Image (cartoon, rainbow over all chains, first blue to last red; front, side, top):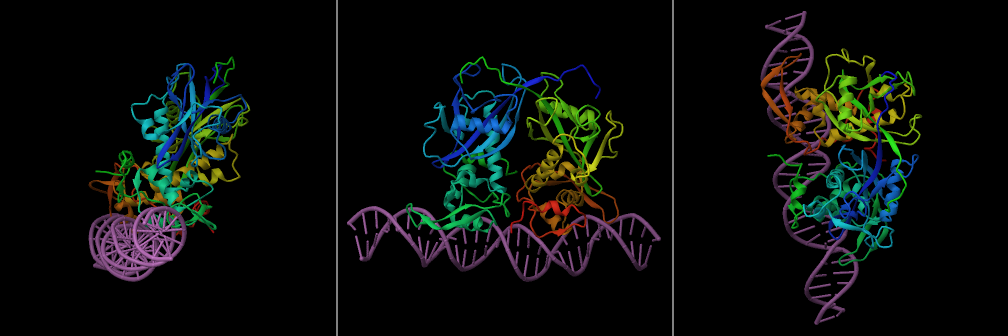
Length: 252
Length: 252
DNA sequence: GTAGCTTTTTGTCAGATCGACAGAAAGTCT
DNA sequence: AGACTTTCTGTCGATCTGACAAAAAGCTAC
């Protein structure tokens, strides 16, 4: 309030990335092996400090996305701020965590500068067997929870798919992220009925195994109406992912 | 990657607050008159720099909440990070914006240290007639949009109410934040059917004008199931707030 | 080239939900 | 006592949802 001689403390700002994608039928997160000082050898989220005084935070996140994962043009949003005083032994470091959603990729991370990056199933990454640097386990959990929630009421699922996709590909996104199984026929009807969610992408088709499927692309609408409610009427998946998916929806 | 002699740039961290409440039938935000250097005399969000090297960010937000608004025990969540390089002429300042939801208050902000704080209807604050400091107009808009969205699928609406509340009080929250009118009878049924949203608070009643209403308190569930969908079937409100509420839900 | 397999797409049907509205219940005010 | 206000309980038809049947449209194997 008054013009004090007091000076506010300065902090170091880092941009970290929770990059999620689908590999097979499971949700994966990108992790790197730390080569330097704190938590050396442990797994960590890709990220780094602001390059200079004038770099925008989201620009820094996109730079790391490109440098450490070789990714561009993917969905990117701010996830949260993690700045607990004791989290970094080097001093007061505040991490602005970002959530990035990447479509299925041809090769893991080959050809990138950071060849020490690897995709890991999120359930493995969050299991106690893996040592993650800093509070990155917390950040990953928050990112996954954000993705789970946003799948319900936004068109985020399309960010997991390529430019065009089939409805069953979209269904696999929901099944993998939510860890449940859905009825293909009801899913088909529901997705088609959510106005502006997906639009037909030409009369072309793509071959796989059964009947060729229609292709769609992401529609103009970001907020789904009606939403894709994750109700209690779901068949639990065979995998161990089903447990975590139930949290937050039930009561006694 | 390598141990460079390079040093990452330091920034100043501020915690700013979008404090929303209901006054009458309208959504209000708390603003303060800036007394110092940049944007002196303009209206701004309450907030300030970290006090010292060891203060947690959320702790700083709660401290400002108490100092500048005299509020404690209100809903508080991180809204986002606003750190555009040019936003503060004093240097690189990164603001961690928080969204706080306060129940209806007996008196505006009287008795507080910061007597220069005032509640303002959000539509007034966001109209072009008001000069807001920094990018605070953007932050307020993001906060309101966050509240609108979270009202749909979380129990956030109860944060606008006191410890106990009637169903029509809860309905006023939805009507004010969404800027629409809802049918009391359908709202009653819908809220009662959303499991864990609200629970009866004793057989007591409260007097007003008509038939005494039952009292409820916030239930254990945070994620609403089914959600309170803000569908297209709504009667537009008389006020000028109805326009902004429609955005993001429609397509052509 | 036809039978079998797989996957997509179109239906069907009963139960749940929703929006619009009627009307009873339970207070206050005049 | 009667008017008025607000809360609460229903009702009704349209829509939506979940479970399931079956047709459509490709491929593979024989």
